[in-house]
Image (cartoon, rainbow, N blue to C red; front, side, top):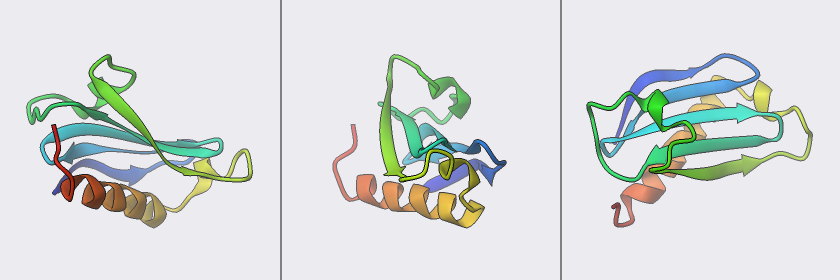
Length: 96
């Protein structure tokens, strides 16, 4: 389940924040990569922006693009779909 703090917005980078299964996440798409950082443990009181480069966060590369600058211009719908696909994958697995 995704709870959005901020749905995908912006350009260079496209960003989004929220919680997936109560774990705070930060999504960023820029240069040639779309990545998502997510906390190891559930914490609905934690601001999702605090997972950026945090020691207790895991970074996942969701998509790599062939062109160096394409990722910063993906549509908001494409960003949302990448996040939803990731959430569905980890929901069907055992989350820590």
